[in-house]
Image (cartoon, rainbow over all chains, first blue to last red; front, side, top):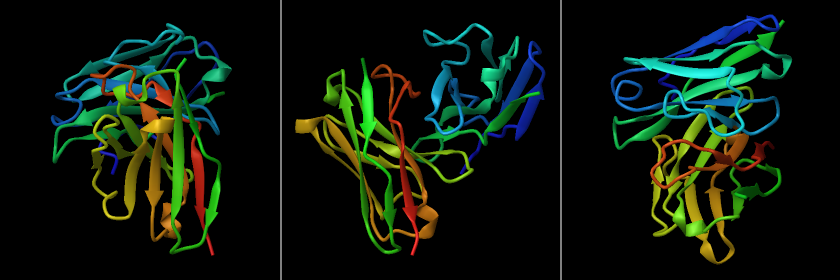
Length: 111
Length: 120
């Protein structure tokens, strides 16, 4: 059901910058804002970025989001070991009767 | 503070039914919709739909019609997900989730998840 495409994996050493892409279409990213979730192993997802580039209170400014056209990106600067997790983009999709779609997910590994 | 506490893990046989609960606290239950999200083992997140906690009207995503039912008991601030005629492919962790504001379309508050295992 995932209509937002992400790379399956990304990695970096501590301190590096890692970027995750999220590709969608005109019915989702192209016309609605993008959100990002972090899921640590065995836990519920956590909202990381909302409305393309806004961080909820408590989320470090190492995490940043951007959107252009039908694609979005999440950047993690100054990568830390605790950032090792799965990351999902998401957006509302205006097709059919409307639905909330998640990306395929990206596993970030800290080397 | 907002809390969503879900019921514990379930082990069910194929063909049986299961009812997962999500008890909300820390806010007025009927002021915010409740969403449900599925995550199969080793897989990604899948939005199942939502229920209007004010009217009780459910909306189901494609693929979650027929055997899946969202319901409420507003007297105890609890939302329910019932799945009937369980199949092995229903094995997953099910999450309830809530938006931070009435007009937001993202989920800031999540339950801890309920693992439903379907096996003979």
